[in-house]
Length: 372
Image 1 (cartoon, rainbow, N blue to C red):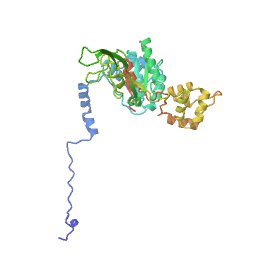
Image 2 (image 1 turned 180 degrees about the vertical axis):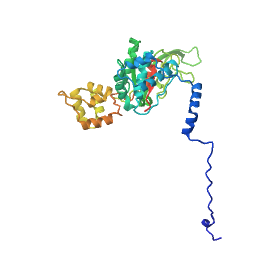
Image 3 (image 1 turned 135 degrees about the horizontal axis):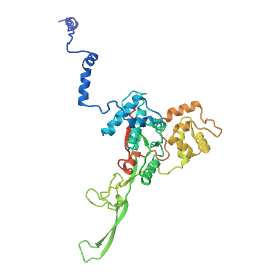
Image 4 (image 1 turned 90 degrees about the vertical axis):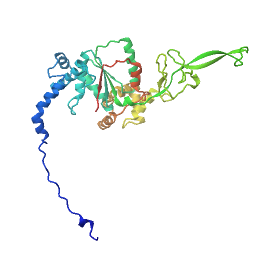
């Protein structure tokens, strides 16, 4: 009874390793059966692109300002064949870093443009927006590039809608670049209804048709487009004074949205103040330096640089042709500004909401999503 547990335990012999005759290394399996598997896959899923390049698409790539390498051209040929010839909805370019996925996507957009698809929407990580812009301009001759990620995105979207009404047909390739962070932003809104008065003659004594009458006027919320009175879930007209500010309704008659986007700031600031605030977000720039920059270069020039090409701002020169910022300052700015988005009064606006509401269906012909 006093014997310890350790003394009562007896070692268990490990079973001998028995090799299974049906298990073979993967390399040997591929060497023995790879050709047969490839033939079976080819029969069940015949390749869309067999390696024979399309001469027309090859000519488009050869005409680019930066021509893709032969291996890159093969990828573009296969992607185009899948999307255009086969009519598939999507194609994936999966390759290692440094193989030129951006270049191949741009070349594919140029080839597809030659097939009659003119507008390409690029969804990019925020820090790669301007890299996409630069590579597009360096690759596609005559391309128009719209960056819908900066503080002037609303102005550009409104301009796009105006251009659509003025000149509906475009022949040059157009690229629209949007940072993917902008796709999940929230937005501020407020009701957008008009007051519509409804007049009703009533008796002073309800139920007594012989009593004097009077006209009762009530203001109800109505659609600003077609004028139909808005009703609640029970079909009752909603009074204008008590129209709910926490629900986004749509007109049941014409489908018009009964709300509109708005900016949360109560008092608008001057453009100079907005630019100074944006400059103060940049490392090494304080309020005094920001004021000196706006006085020397003007808020329009500086805001244009920050909105369209931050690297142009980093290399800003004075009247004598000297760089305004030192090399140390420029390096700090470049590291920080790659992930910054500047706001001059529209920072909380969601561009995807404008695209959904005001641009027609099918406005964009090709979508390129950069996942990295």
